Length: 237
Image 1 (cartoon, rainbow, N blue to C red):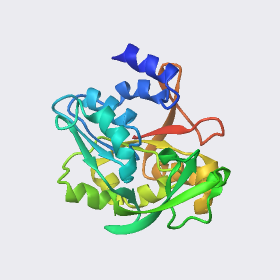
Image 2 (cartoon, rainbow, N blue to C red):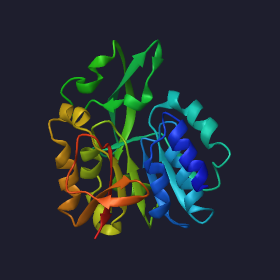
Image 3 (cartoon, one colour):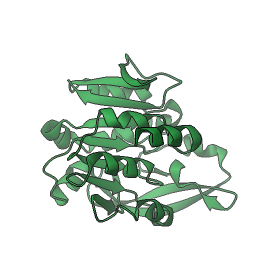
Image 4 (spheres, rainbow, N blue to C red):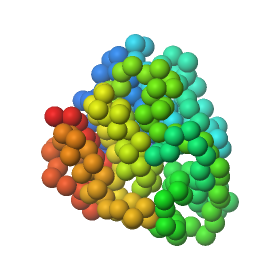
């Protein structure tokens, strides 16, 4: 499986090198939440790592992203993957507008973001067209309670700048389970929400987490958020 992940990370433009590093974090039997599942590459990788005794909750609010997601997940769904059509953020059991950019007539779901708390399009101004889609929202805290999750080992979140809002809605979960987090943190995305990339990291480091990045073939401690790295791993010390 490791060789397959390396090939995927090298050859697939949508795959990230951090996929390879998941094997050093996620173990058989683990329970994971993939926030912003998009095409499901992380979901499928996590599914293989947790095995039949583990569970992966795949969270993707945009229903028109589901056909591609279904194609990727279908062979494993029902075994250890659970799909959820909801956007996780800071608001419990609500509805919010999600802005979806359009390129050449097709929605670019991977660049979608919840507009609540955002000041304009920010990094998405490069797109000429945008769709406004009303989606269900919830907090990770309520999501965990509502789905009867009694253990949580790992959370991946890629929500185009709203990662801090996901964490703000997960305070109880963090205190209870101390899960590892893999977060995409980019200044160009977070600025539309009025905070800095480092604020996301500080939220977790102030709660006893250490931060690292994937370098070569290992997770290396990082002192702060940089300009050339997108994904950061946080683990409770």
